[in-house]
Structures are given as structure tokens and as C-alpha cells.
Amino acid sequence: MLYNIQDMIRKPQIKLIAYFLACTCAFISLVAWQRASEQFVLESIRQAERQTPGLLIGNGADDPELFAKIFPRFPFSWMIPASLTTTVERDPGFRASGKNNQWCLSHRYALSIPTLQLSTDVLLPCPRYWNARDWDLLERQMQAGLTQGVVAYPHSVQPGQRGSLIIVGHSSPLSTTDDSGISGRIFSRVPELKTGDQIIVRNADRTFTYVVYETSIVNAEETSLLEQQQDASQLTLITCYPVGSTKQRFIVKARFVHEGEGE
Image (cartoon, rainbow, N blue to C red; front, top):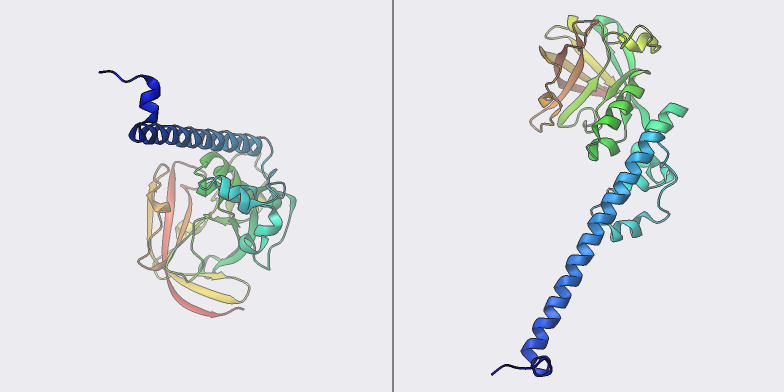
């Protein structure tokens, strides 16, 4: 015997099933709305960043914590005002400039190689493009830093810590019209480094000494050298090779051996 609709609704089991289905549909709709909203906001941010890099620094959400609760998987740190991230992203030695503010770069360390009579600033980009896997904007961020010296990859560890501090620098200007000056060829003599040579990294008050243990040449497409490791504290230098070409990369790996007072 068939039940009519009213009889079905009166039965507790049917009410429970109907309630469960309604809640399930509402949950699915909420998740779909959240994901669509995230994608919309992410794409809007990326478009704004490509048009005007650094535009959103200091012009983001007024309440990032509330924003995070609404979008728990959203990389809302992009939207945090610069005043809230200054102590995290920049050290007391940060030297501001228009380009640095635009690309979220800080002058973090100094690097010297006594055997090459080389000394240069090391800039550190904030990790937002690395974390977002936005490789186009990361490349532009890194190139902005390379006009001022050499640049550490955003996921690098600090000097002396277990892991890899990965620093890249130009061995020759990118083009005949490149106006980066000495920074455009700061690593031109890095291929001369030999096993046992020292590389020194300094921050505001400490000196970290590394000793070269390996050099190699890899194809330009090789990205495994950017992977982090936790086996030892090491420094990796990367530059284009041969000098004047971008076909390959010359790699220098050095082990951390000593920490001392700053000089």
C-alpha cells in the first residue's frame, strides 16, 4: 500500500532522512560557494599584482584574523597590512626604497668571498609568491632584487641553521641595455671557486663561515637544486654559466663550519 506525502512526512524516520538530505545539500552549497569565492578573490589579487606589483601591501583586509576565519585555506597573509608584517619580514637593518617596498625585499645579509675579493648585499624576498607557487611573479621579484646585489630564495634557512641557504646572482648582464651595473656581473668569478675556499655571510651581529666542498654545472631547467634539505647546514650559490650565457648554471655548495661575532 502506498503512502501519501502527508503520511510520509509524519513518520519520524522520513523526517530524519529529509532533514539529513537538506543539511547535506546546504553543506555542499556552502563548500561550493566558499571555493568559488576563494578562486575569485585569488584571481583578482593576482591580476592586481601583475598590473601593479605591491599594490596590496598596506591596503589589505582591515581584520585579517576575521578574514582567515571566513576563508581558512586562503593565503590571507597577502592582504595583511605592511605594518603588521614588518617585524616578521624585515630585520632592523632593512633599508627601504621604492623598488624594495614594491617587491617586498629586504637587505638581510652581507656576503663576501675573500679569494675572489667579492663583497655584496644579500636581499631576501618575502615568501608570498613562493608560497602561492606564482612563478611568474616570483621571477619578477627575484630580478628586482638582482639589480641591487644577490638574492636568497624565499624558502632559504637563516645562516647557520640546519638546511640550505640558497643564493643566486648574475654572472653577466641580461642584455646589452641592462642597467644593473656591477650587480649584473657580481657572480662572474664564482666559477673560479675551489674546494676549501671560504664564503662568509654576515647579519647585523654575527658572522657565519662556510667552506666550499663541491662545484658542478647543471642545465638551466634543473630545479632540484632548489629543494630544501635537513641533513646539514649548507650554502648554495647559483649563477648562469658560461659567463655571458644562460644555457647552464654553475653551482657551488659549501658547508657551515663556524659562527662568530660580527665584524
